[in-house]
Amino acid sequence: MSLQAGPPLEPPSHPVGHRSSTLVDGDRMDRLVPVDAWYPADTNVGGGPAIYEILPGVGFTAAGIQDAQIADGRHPLILWSHGRTGTRSSYVLLCEALAARGFVVLAPEHAGDALADWIIGAAVDDATNEANRIGDAHFVLNQTLGLGATVLADASLGAIAPHVDADRVAAMGHSYGGFTALAIASGVTAHPSVRAVAGMQSFTRSLPKTAFESIAVPTMLVVGMQDTTTPPETDADRAWAKLAAAPAWRVDVERAGHQACSDVGLYLEVAPTVPDLPDLVRAFVASMAADVTGTPGDPWRETVALHVRIAGAFLQGALGLDADAAERELACIGELAGVVVSNRGTFAPMHA
Image (cartoon, rainbow, N blue to C red):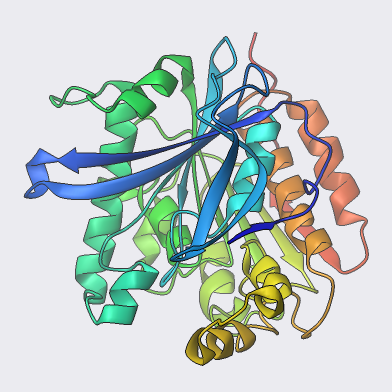
């Protein structure tokens, strides 16, 4: 059964292509790392609409064109990390929208902390999970950027890699994925290619204060003020107080819960239309009804679209695409009702 996600969150600047890959990390006992990629496409011609599976036999289509040819030129890269119990395709609308803005988005799935692992009882402990996440992120970046000893062998990712701008690489993530992003920009686990980092409703409490103090690249925290899973007082306030990055940005969104950037709002919308949906699944989806905006039943698209707008503006400035335009856009976002934008420092001038 294929459902439709509806129109894109914002008018696209580029058609969006989608590819899926599975990489094998020979340095970590042949660990499998599935990766979804979204990217600006050359045309709308490809293998037909990309279908994103929610459950076996149930998926949805959005704007992505499966296996479309990537647009010519080199494009900024975002390494996107999913949250606990999530999957690499739990943020399709956000990732497609960023690709439509001109970014290549690579989203690895972190085995041991994905939804299937939790369902079958194969989830790993926190320390193992954190090491796995950092290792996955480094591995995918190294494979894409041609770093390290392992040669890129995957054909799907191999078609994208030559079009990545290695000087404009960002790490981003949601919840535990925010931990991943911050970790690969800090201390001994920092990846040398990461030039900017952003976390949305990030889980940060297990990071030592020295991690925040050691981040030297532009950093952004997007905070859901209705988030009860990673509340501001436990996961944003401490991180913000310790961040030494310059510039550092924080955006507090009043009508945002823990799932404010994910596809959960879409799942809530389409679940009633799926026949024979198991009661357990229906109850699980319903349990997250308040997690998008903080109020069950609220419209969700504008909340996810706001996260795209925030991320797009930050990346535009942090990666040196257009610092002045980024500053103006973030100022406009700060004038929206229920949004507070704070910053320490400003973006560097646009690259020549």
